[in-house]
View 1: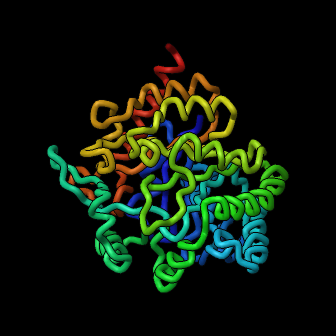
View 2: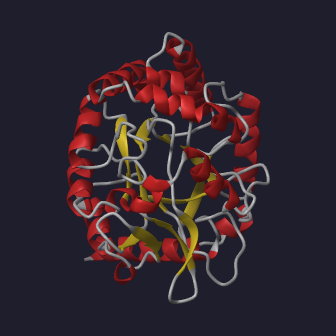
Length: 355
């Protein structure tokens, strides 16, 4: 297992690489290139520049999160082949830079959403939260405004401004796309990139829908055990894997996250894990919590144990942290609570290793 921390380059992060280097057990970062529209090729020069900066801080750049999939690929439009070719060129450039794992998603239009980015908790900390009823009442314009206004002036992956003008049109398009048609578009993409992933020795982990509940009648992709199985069965390559996000899957109380971890890790289909905890306030509403098991509804020890016992040897990162100790940062990605989470996860991993 390798522990990494997500880091946003190009001055778009309050957390410094030198600070990440000081967290015990953290060997690298999961990063990406900002300012490149979905569908464009990531230039080798910029990849090497970011890699040199990360390596210069004593850290590894083996995980990329994420290479955005162009909406035309998701829609299955004739232009999809051009964008897939560009995606493959980016893959090859990243492989040449030593990247081993890519986290990505195939969610249509909306990558993720929270109805409140800074919900005050009883202990004085703040966490991102989700109310399904509130979300269903929002117009797309209000939803977009709530995310941008709560961003603390940082970019939000999946909410890039260049996406906004076409969001309403894209949502309308998907009203006439069936689940089967959408999964056919996914298969077309996977069948094109997986041979290259094999060649480049690069694992891909699809990120679950976040939250796992439907909004704007958009197709749901990966939100439970059965949809994970369907996704991975589209292409049998071991490079076609799951980014196990415990918070995204755990947001649905019906999901047995321990069983999901055990099943797919034992098949070697989980290259990357996002570990975080959630606390439910109803069947569909939740807020993110400290990583500790007793702070939320997920048994973090059992999840880590399931991974360890099933032979998991990929990358783990502590996921969204609370805003604590008056830290000012992007929502969910401050230093302090994620550093606490990393220490806790490393402790769980050691305990499962020695038990």
